[in-house]
Amino acid sequence: MYITQQEVEKFIKLVSSYETIIIHRHQRPDPDALGSQLGLKHLLSKAFPQKRVLAAGSKSRGLEWLGAMDKVSKEDYAQALVIICDTANEERIDGKYYSLGQKIIKIDHHPLVEDFGDLQIIYPQASSTSEIIGQLAQAKSELLPMDAQIARLLYAGIVGDTGRFMFRSTSADTFKIAAWLSQYDFDRYDINNQFQLLSYQQAKFEGYFFDHLQINDSGVAWLSIPIALRQQYGLTEEDTNLFVNLPSRIRDVQTWVIFVEQDTQPSYWRCRIRSKGSSINQIASLHEGGGHPLASGANVYSEEEKMILIQELSQVSLADSKA
Ligand code: AMP
Image (tube, protein in one colour):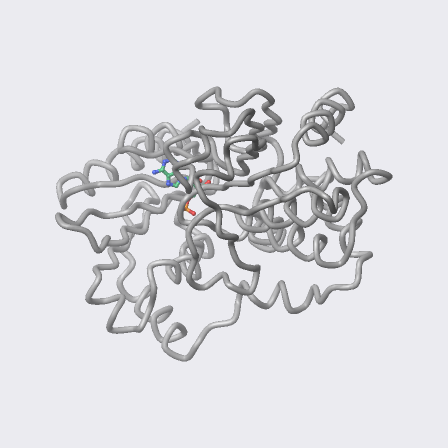
């Protein structure tokens, strides 16, 4: 266990001092952002039934099976403790009133890029923020009782951020927490399946994906998904999550980027960057992005900038293959 007793005690002390607790997570939530946020919400609601524990943020299409957000007003923050899950920098927090809270706790597994919050519980070696919250709950189980609903949410977050226990971030600690959560009565098969089930149209898009994926001699692969293409296959922006790890299955591919056109004026391309070994988050930070060494995001604004990003990825990919 990496979480320290001191951190657990500080966390409990802060949580115990507030009657309203508002939990945030990052924009464009993935299953770990939602699983950690909603898992923590239910964990605290169960432990402290007299408190108001709210989940703040916008609705996310495609992940409704994890649960819904609460209605949170500006006034709710006046006397509140705010907890931010799975978010490295303030700019990416979903919900604009978080700074109105009395105190902020940050719980995250991204590399530290920005200090914020009165208490920071940050473990970049953790597979997911849900894993950290699992450790927190386990370390204080007499006060924070686990149940099937909470276990399901945290397990979903772990499965999401580890690619069903496939990614390198999966550690002995990950398995320990996943095994502990698995004792509770929720449908693990159903959760695991949520990450692989496709509609027929999505399965057809998988064909398009491999057909049009480009790969260069440095082992960098890329694919652009313009809005019109997405619409042709009936895909939402969030659905691109279903395909982002497909290139990992190609032996020659070392790093890859999926460019997803955004429906804004003027439009830009959200970049979903992944790597099998070379660290790519520094490159992402050159293009309004960041993230983990092997999984990052960024934004680019033109075809030229796409090519620049591919060149940058090629350089690290090539340098690492020679090292
Ligand atoms: P995604 O491709 O959106 O799943 O993102 C992969 C990882 O990169 C996640 O941990 C995100 O939190 C992080 N990330 C994505 N976009 C950005 C961004 N624009 N700035 C900082 N981090 C990002």
